[in-house]
Each structure stands twice: as C-alpha cells, then as structure tokens.
Image 1 (tube, rainbow, N blue to C red):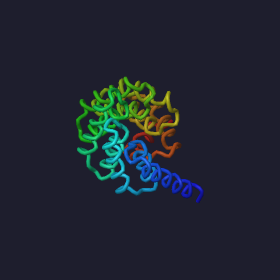
Image 2: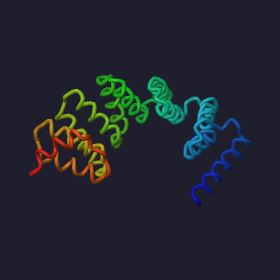
Image 3: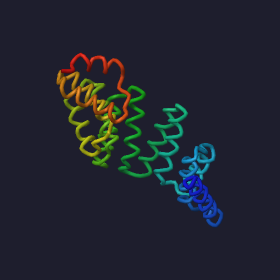
Image 4: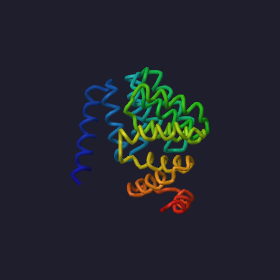
Length: 207
C-alpha cells in the first residue's frame, strides 16, 4: 500500500511540475516512467512523445518507446526507436544493446553481434549485453567465444541465470559435460526454466 501511495504522490508531483513548466522534457519523462510502473501504458506513451518534443535528444525516452513497441510485438518499431536513441546520443550503450537483442530476434545474427559488441565497447559493465552477445555467438556456432562472453557476464553478475543457462548449452556443445551440469543446476537454482531437451541431455551426463 505504501508503495502505491508513494507512486501516486510521485505522479502527482510530476503532473504539478509539468503544469508549472510544460516545456520540461525531463518532467514528462519522469511522469512516463512512473506511469509505466503502474501499467498505464497509453498515457505513458503520450508523455514519452511529449518528453521528446520538449527535449529531442532524450535518448532514454526513445528506448522506453522501443520497450513499449517490443511489448506489443512490434520489433520494427522497437528497432527504429533504439536506432534514434543512438543517433541522438553517441555511444549510448543501452540503445545498442536493445538493437542487438531485436536483431537477434529477427534472425540477423551478424548484425546483432556488431551492435552488441558496440554496446560493450561503450559500457564494459553491461552484463545483459554480454549474455545476449554470448547467445548470438552460440547461434553462429562460435562456442569458445560464447563461453568466454558468458563468463564475462557472470563476473559482473554471478547470479545471472540466463548466462548460466547459456553456459550449460555451450559446454554441452563443447563436450565439457561436468561444467554443463554445474551451470545447468545453477540456472535452475536461480529460478530459470531450462528447456526440456537440454535437461534431458544433461541428465545423460550426470555422474
């Protein structure tokens, strides 16, 4: 209840700020993020557009609009908004990370790898980008690169379940079965739903 009350108060404060200064892009953006938090997606989208109208270089607003597109299954829209984000702010790692993720969903693995490598160049602590890049390497059959990249993700975030799952698959491919079992168990322990066919194969290599 306290959290809901705080959200309402925060939203009211942002609306008040906008009323006194309608041209403040950041107030529109802050209101949009708060509205997203309470799943008021339509109004949040309007506020994000208002934020961009006031502050055209607000890269975060483009990323949030991309997120709303992704939620609707609009991969093209998500890609375009994130490309805008990287145009208005050079070296915006989150934008490149999202571009890579969408390109991977679209099956553009080579393009995804290029985008994700950029995301990591601009932010060497971007664990999600490492995990997505590792997945892209796996899809290309670059097993060694996938393992190295997943390990980098885990160095940043040891409880990153997706990276443990990816490592289980990569180690299976590499016939390093003990390590595959270890990372599969860790992924499950962290609440990740490992694919049934992977679990089945892991069980055949359990000692």
